[in-house]
Image (cartoon, rainbow, N blue to C red; front, side):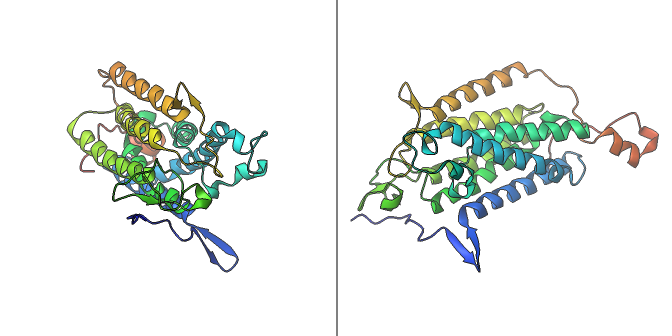
Amino acid sequence: MPLALIPSPSEGVWHLGFIPIRAYALCFILGILVGAWLSDRRWRARGGEKGTISDIAVPAVIFGLIGARLYHVIIDWQTYFGPRAIKEPYQALFIWEGGLSIWGAVALGGVGVWLACRRRGLSLGAVADTVAPGIAFGQAIARWGNWFNQELYGSPTTLPWGLEIDQAHGGEPGVLYHPAFLYESLWDAALGFGLILAGRRFTLRHGRLFALYVAGYTLGRFWIEGLRIDPVGGVDHAVTFLDLRINQWTSIVLFVGALVYLWVTRNKDTEEIVVSASHKQAADPAHSNSATTGNGVKGI
């Protein structure tokens, strides 16, 4: 029997009295905290007000959680509904069991960010560029929750970093699998550092750094998604079209869309509001008709 460099966790839930502490949730929360912390530092380095990112993060996380679960349930609806269902419909609400999609999180989370930016009078593009590296690092951390849940793994492998999966999660005795969760975590971390370097080296404003994040993430996700075989309850419910998973098609569409956006906005060079006019007026009444602008993030 091959030796797994990455063994399966013996458990992913601990109990503090009658309160269950789930590793998946802890990884997810830690990812949010790290992403928010980095984004706040980058925002203040850009000249923004302290606490702005924290305020924006609240609706972003709420909307993002709803969108992440909603996308997962829609794509994997047969797990909860219909003749092939292996779970009760109400279990679609059990986010702690896994099943949060980054596509839904970014899409609906973006709505929450847009609403917060509109209320504060801030430039959505400036906020998006600021949080892009933080999102990548947050994903890198959150992906370890999939390890505890024994999900997001690829085809069998004889490589020394093979992942052990128990039979309850679709694995076979003596067989190791590609740790797709680890591949994505490393890809996301590298992407986060790359975005920071790109932001220092180039003038990427008006959402262009965020578009670069989208292009970089989808490029890696397309490959990693192609490795996946992780079933649900022993049955592979992955939705495919023309031999590609739906998530791969989503990656293609978003990758192309990001490149188009980068091209269309390549000459856009107007100023972006990073401090609302109302805050500027409160701080300096003599300049009540202007708002602070930020041209880029320095040093972070």
